Amino acid sequence: MADERVLLITGASTGIGAVTARQAVERGWRVALGARSEGKLADLAEELGAESALAHPCDVTEWPDQEAFVAATLERFGRLDAVFANAGFGAKRGFLEESPEQWRAMVLTNVLGVAYSIRAALPHFKQQSAGHFLLTSSVAGRRALPGSLYSSTKWAVTGMGEALRQEVADTPIKVTLIEPGMVDTPFFDNPVSGGLEAEDIARAVLYALDEPAHVDVNEILIRPINQPT
Image 1 (cartoon, rainbow, N blue to C red):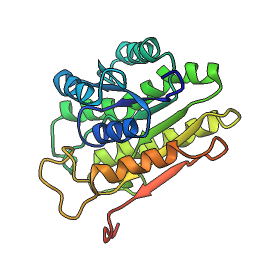
Image 2 (image 1 turned 180 degrees about the vertical axis):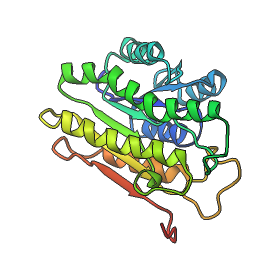
Image 3 (image 1 turned 90 degrees about the vertical axis):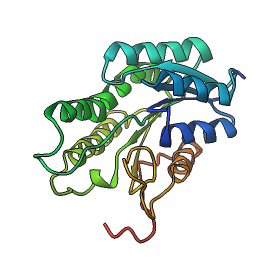
Image 4 (image 1 turned 60 degrees about the vertical axis):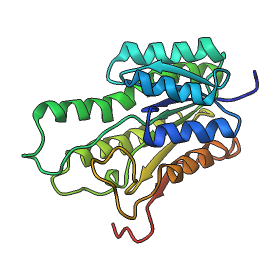
């Protein structure tokens, strides 16, 4: 057990986060699962098994929650090898859509939440001279979408990932941006036709994690076939 790598995942209760946790455990990882949905987290941890999974309620917009999540992971497993900053949600396009309150929650989750995840784990990664950050951005973080504040938040994550990579470039710490196109997950209110599955994104995450120590996969842009932009 002491040799099994540990992956911390935010937004782990459903969708890409939950599927990534399942695939990681299948490949021998142990996982720390963070999200606001305590019931769903507990169910997933029970499914994965007490030896392999820790469920820890976490609001990524709250700095004390993120600090406590990393601390609980280290206390439970004695190590932390990778962080998948995956928590996030979207909004309707249009700067007259949604409410200012919804906008604020989205910006705090999608941008500040990712920054807090980095800040919470980075001292430990520097101390152990190893670690891997994976940040969920989007195709929408590479091209502007009309009227999309969500796209703007993902541009911020893309920039954050590169800024972090440059900061730790003289260390063995890795940084990977995961940039999905359309994915059929609970992220969308209505089912997505012809989209990727959460399993497709999870495989990309595990691909980056499984590369040798000298290989740093910085970006994975993954679209469903026939998505034109």
